[in-house]
Image (tube, rainbow, N blue to C red; front, side, top):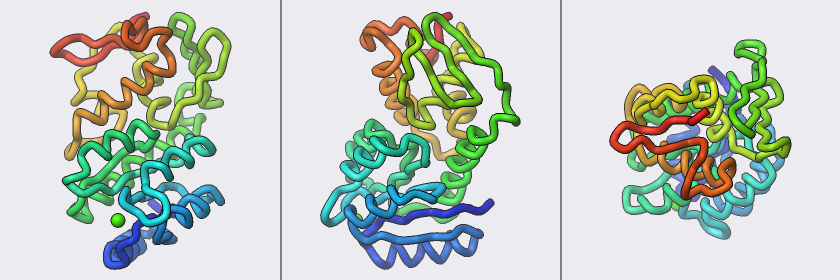
Length: 231
Ligand code: CA
């Protein structure tokens, strides 16, 4: 697999090791050493994935992600966090990041995450490989070809991961999925998963598609079991 990856990280030693390993695996890389430069390069586009550190000079990674997502909802963003930044990774997911990886990480784990996130994106960009009929549940309509979701005819703006998750639910309504199953099927994780990733993405999705996210009509919690989309 190949692609262009933007590394936004202020620690030169980490950038160097990331560049070395990514290039060895066939990726093109570019680096930005502060948040402002990172955002500018990210918005110029042409990247297949962003690797984003959170503690950055000039603009932190959370703010960068928020501003980036206002313009680009599709390019996968993978956050690099330190263990002591547990809360930040949740904030990062809320700001529209797709995934995170905790430092120190192994290169094997990082490559697996990058591949999983790029594969999902590539699959979405090639609608001929997937079914192209609109999916409808209640007032929701999902167009797999145009990658758009409508609620009562109005476009709902979703990130790539929110779209993937909703599509997965809409293809199999009224079936309960455990968070482990969702991580495996939607995030392509066979290992290294964190269940909170699922919870945060479900919460964000509810805020966008439910009239009352606290009393969801569509994505309901099945206590002790997981989540289900009600038809
Ligand atoms: Ca840093």
